[in-house]
Structure formats: structure tokens, C-alpha cells
Image 1 (tube, rainbow, N blue to C red):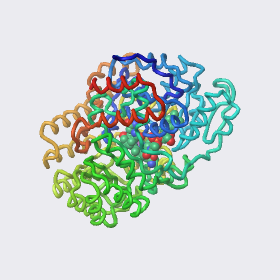
Image 2 (image 1 turned 90 degrees about the vertical axis):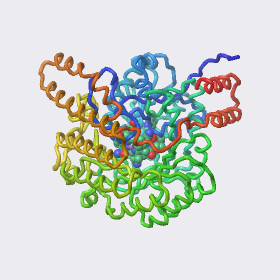
Image 3 (image 1 turned 135 degrees about the horizontal axis):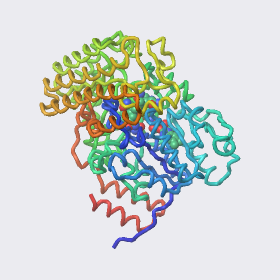
Image 4 (image 1 turned 135 degrees about the vertical axis):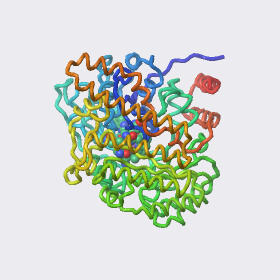
Length: 607
Ligand code: B12
């Protein structure tokens, strides 16, 4: 027997918008801007921080629901985001403007929230919202912004203020940006930026509260973090992340999350690390609920060898088969010892590093000082120790980098594949669509040979609607124009694709399919350029719209098929029973009513 129950009204609904709203209607060639991440160029992945926000607020009595509008829109042409928003009745909406490519989508979603619910506050947060807070708060559909890379506590305070209608306390909420007075005419108030936690032990890597929330609102589809095409696809490969830190010790000039960048616009004087013993516990806990790979975000060696060794010692005690993915931000000083220790501590492991270029002087100019010989040494020791897959990421759009240099980088990728075999997987991608605001090169463009083409949030919002990524790119360098960056990306993609087939990393069919896609992208690009010259707007729009079906063929990837980014794992990875058991146990602790259990089991049967 199934009992019906009313879905509770959450206090806060966190909405993740697609990069462009509504991408299903706009004819845009996004290009390979998302070829290096699991999501599409709609950037349907919501910030991982949604999980810690949810956990912290729920723990303190504020009910939170996450709705990934972007993934839902990707999943179904008939999904009506506007209608869903119209039906929602939270105390507040939270929208992330974390990644700048969401400049268009997040503001459109805010506008829709206000259209149907003029009295429900709209709260923004995320790195881009922080960087552009002064401009963002002036949009009529934005009521609040919480600045910073750690907003859990100020957001809790704001939600308490909203639920209690005690608006006089707004002035005391740290990091808050708000409007004092009615609507758009209110005076902008910027509270001191004082909440920057220096330790992360309070914020766990615990996904149970989020699962609990999705069961409570009977909505697993809205929680899908990426891949979006169908809920089932993600449930088969529910890769989990474990975050080790906020901030970074390194200073790569192009990174908006670097030490100097976060110091400048997030007031973070130094990175905060989670206790290494807790990291090991977080990982072991995750292995109870999923057999999928676990991606450890942040190089364990960042705070020093002792930190890394403590995590590994903690992992060694537990036995699990999940693949762990370790990042390297630098080459390892004692590779033999480190990789051996990793191998002794976990059964299945993978590594990834971003050397960006084969040219050591370019690498040094962007802030990375390690040598090619050291990279090769690291690869050798990792593979000798049993590493399953070693990914290397290379980038186009660096200081001093010409297209000739990019093609030499591709040659070096060939050399690595030839020398080390199929377990070494190189990727080459343009730095796109935007050089991160706040990064060293963005703030000092002349010094590093960059020219920044857009500066205001409004310019970025519009840039996202450009018909092709050639016009969306926000920079060019002294060594490559936007056109050259675009053309070189396709050229490098074609060459690396062939080399991967030659060395047996991909089969001939995949190679042909990718080559076809790249060539289609090149053709569409030049067609768009011609159409763009038409002065009559309606004719131009009509011609672009005719290309939409072909443009959509390139939405999933262009120069690099996503499945080659996946880490080895068996399908059907979620340990449903254990997950449900844990959620149920948790429910009993928090006095939950019986009908929910029916729903939990019906969810399992529906699989
Ligand atoms: C891990 C990581 C990823 C992972 C996971 C992303 C994820 N789902 O969060 C992967 C590899 C998938 C990724 C992808 C991308 N990333 Co990334 N990523 C990072 C990295 C290294 C760490 C992020 C992290 O650990 N966060 C910690 C968690 C706990 O916090 P959080 O998610 O930021 O959320 C907190 C706050 O931001 C804020 N917040 C966020 N949203 C909201 C919403 C509201 C309402 C409120 C109040 C607060 C709030 O509160 C949260 C809790 O405190 C940062 C660099 C850095 N040092 O920060 C880059 C970084 C964030 N990424 C960046 C970029 C550009 C991207 C991509 C666009 C790259 C690309 N072209 O493919 C994609 C976007 C993918 C998508 N959305 O689909 C830039 C962002 C620059 C910018 N201003 O746009 C950064 C800064 C640096 C970089 N270049 O990599 N990324």
C-alpha cells in the first residue's frame, strides 16, 4: 500500500541555471568550451558548495531543496522551467552565479522568479557574484548577494532573518550585499567581508543530507549534478567528489581560484584545509554508498607531505575497490616513495596533472615551474606502482604561446603515448570561454600579453548570446588573436585525435566520429561568420536558426569525447540499499514520518 503525502515547502530553493537561458531556443555554436569537464557547454553542473550549504542550513532548521534547472532542461525538451518556478513557494530563492558563463542564465532565472513571486527574495552567491557584486546588486531581480568562497554561515543568518522577518539585523550579517529600501531604488549596502573561515572541519563531504532532501521533495531528477541527459545515466556513474580545501597555495596566472585571486576578491589570506584524518573518513564513508570513482579535489601534497601521508594512512586501514582520482598541482618531489605509498594504501587509483604546455618557458611564465623530465618521471613511477589512468591536460591561450607551439605540444603528447602506452591520456583544450576575472593575468593583462575584451557583467551576459564561441571569448594574447585561438584549437584537436587512434587509445570509429564533429564545427563556424555580416537582424536570426539542428549535434562535445574522460568503473554503481538504509536511519534520528519510507522503496523498485 502506498500512502500519499504532501511534499513539504522548503524555506530555501537553490536553483542552478543553464549558462544560456533558454539554450533550447538560441542557435549558438559553443565549441569545445566544456570538452574538459563532464558537463556540456550549458554548464549544467551546480556548485559542489550547494551540498555544504544544504547540510549546514538543514542542520540548523532551515529546509533546503536543490533544483538543477539546467540539467532538467537538457534532459527534456518539454520540461517547462518557468512553469516549475511559478509553482514553487519557498521563503527565498538562491541562485548561483559561480561560473561567469552563467551570466545570462542565472539573471534570466532570477527575472522569472521575480515575475511570478515579486515578494520572495532572490539571493545570489558564488565566485562571479562576489567579483561583480557591485554591478550585480543593481539588477532589479537581485535582492541579496553573499560574497565569498564560504557562505554557509552568513546564508544561514540571512535565512533566519528572512524567516523571522527581522530585517533590522541585515546590517550585522557578514559578507552580505543588499538593497536598503524598496525595489530597484533602494540604496546599495555592502556589509564588511569578514567571514572567511580558516578551517573546514565543520563542513563535511557528506552527501546524505542531499539525498535525504531529494527524497523529501520526491525529486531525484532535479539533483542530477551533470550528464543531465537522463537521470539513469548519472545514477549509473555517480562520481563523488571529496574537497580537501578552499583556496590554493599556487599562483597560476590564469586561475580565478589561485592564491592571489582569492586574496583579492574573496578576502582569503591563505587556503583552508580540512583535517587529513577527516578526508580519509570522508572517502571511506563515500565508498559505503557508491562503487563509482571518487575524485579528491586538491592535491594532497599542497599542505605538505605529512598531510598526504596522513590521508593515505587513513585509507590504508579501509578496504574498498572504488577508483580514487588524485590531482597533482606540481610534480612530486619524491615520486617513487609517494606513488608506492598510494599503491599500498588504495587498490585502484588514477592521477591527473595539468602541465598545460610542453614548453618549459611558457609553463614558467604561467606560474608552474616543473620540468618535462619531472613529469615523465612522475608518470613512470605512477604507472610502475599500478596507476590505472594518468590524465594530462594541456591548454591553448597561454602567454608566449603560438599555434606552432601548440602543435609541438601535441607532438609531445604523441611522444608520451608512445613511451608510456594507453594508460596515459592527454587532452588539449582552449582556455575558454573566459579568462577568469580576478586571476593575475586578468588583473594585469599588459604584463602578461593579454587583452581583455569585456569587463562588465552586462558585457559577459551579452557575450554568452554570441552565435559562436569565436565572439564569446573574452581575451586574446599578443601571440594569438581570438580567431587564431579558435582555429588552432580545432587543428590541435584533429591532430591529437589521430594520434590517439594511432597509439590505440581510441578506436577507429571514435576517431572518425570526432574528426567528423570537428570538421562540422569548422564549417558551421565559417557559415556563422558569413551570416553574422548580414545587417538585417530578422534575416540574420532566421538564417542562424536554420543551423540549430546541426549546432545541437555539437552540444555534448567537439574535440574530445566525454567518455574518454571517465575513470574506469563498473556500471550500476550506487549502493542503493545501503544508501536508503543510511537515509532511513538518519530519518529516524530526526523523527520522520512513516509515509516517506514507502517512497524510498518505490524509488528503488522504479529503477
Ligand atoms: C573543483 C572545481 C571544478 C570541478 C567541480 C565543479 C563543481 N561542481 O563545483 C569541475 C572540474 C567539474 C569544474 C568545472 C568547471 N570549472 Co571549476 N573549479 C573547481 C575548483 C578547483 C575548486 C572548487 C571548490 O572546491 N569549491 C569548494 C566548494 C565547497 O565551494 P563552491 O562550490 O565554490 O561553493 C561555495 C561558494 O562559491 C558559494 N556559492 C556557490 N553557489 C552559491 C549560490 C548561493 C545562492 C550562495 C549564497 C552561495 C553560493 O557558497 C558555497 C559554499 O560556501 C575551483 C578553483 C578554486 N580554488 O576555487 C575551480 C573554478 C571554480 N572553476 C572555474 C571554471 C571556469 C570552471 C568551468 C567553467 C571550466 C570549463 N570551461 O569547463 C567548469 C564549469 C562546470 C559546470 N558548471 O558545469 C573557475 C571559475 C572562474 C569564474 N569566475 O567563472 C575556477 C575559480 C578556477 C578554474 N579556472 O578552474 N570545476
